[in-house]
Image (cartoon, rainbow, N blue to C red; front, side, top):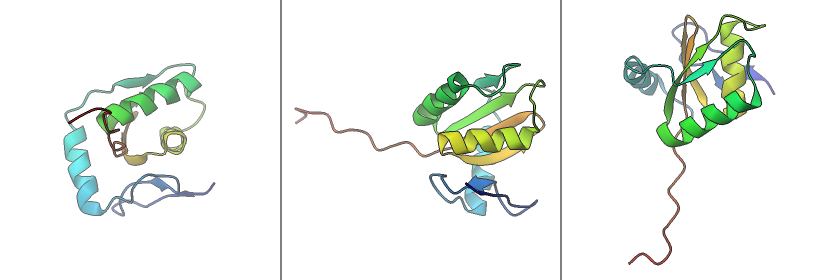
Length: 117
């Protein structure tokens, strides 16, 4: 699947599988919100594994906005690794700064509770 890469100032990198098409205003807001986050998923020397993808997927489902630390032992560049994670989790890649990447995916609608009322 082709990855759409935006240039500097054109907005985030997005895959065709991403959940929402973020506009520039949304990206600015998400970057501001992500500034204060600490990385909650860390990619180590084993690289991107199924466990990393499952962990990121679970955190995106719960939190929507997640910062990931991409370790120095990757076989590829930080940007390529971040795009792989975005594609695998169907999330939007908000930004890549150094070895940290920020991802966003809207929460799925809450399931109705049976017997409520």
